[in-house]
Image 1: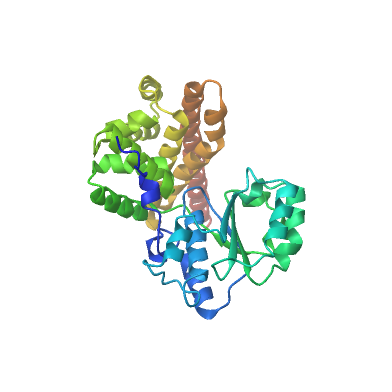
Image 2: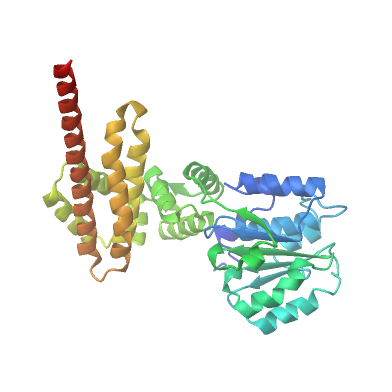
Length: 369
């Protein structure tokens, strides 16, 4: 039994800026700031889970404390850099905002930050999920955040920026982390699978990417789990069964039923999803992505086809909460699909009426001439 096993998400955590996936706009700005010496005293990293906020915070901390002078070219043989990237450096303090959110704890931080770092150039505080701090804790941090000691930097990370007071955000350089694109995720996961000697079916990879919703860490965790389940072989059926997903075939059949106004098939397909233990909310989200893809494929010359697809997207958006929070998710899922049919049908009727009205006006204009 291997007691030293380290999960894929940890082993593949980025150790250079080039290894960060999908956040090129963030990296470009940070590299430019370091190269020009225009380094802020506080940073705010905002974005969905698993998109690289904490990894970027560690990389930035390592870059600021690199041997010689701040640099984004991190030497792999530097003990200090490796300690920071591994979360073991005493001068780079990582704090969980959810469990260290009281005003007393922030006051202690405020007092401690005045002491010089032991081995680094900067003492850096990385506060994850900073939005969990109490109002009084934020207030206690304000003065220090505005005028920190020269040897101190703050890096905040959060998934819910709207909960952070404007007095805090206005004192930070703000960086928006985006969900990682499908192609970037696919390329990285294939690289990981090859290095880890994991065989993954193309449709299984698509299912993993759907489930990850733009998060690299989520995708790596799923790969890790499914590789253990399949002894190094990952199949689509195993992924969709383990995570309650609808298969690509089922989603295509549902979309076909929607386009054909086939209520009977929708009931049957919904029953199949229920029998397979599928998560109806995720199924609706996946259907939304499929519809969005069809909308993107419509040529500009066929603009009259766009309206029904937009109605379908709007209908899904307005019904997702009822499917996620409803008591009987299967029934709410079916109602959501029925509403999609009706919304598109109403739009088609409206379009037809508009065309008839325009044709009638054109006819009367010709008669008058």
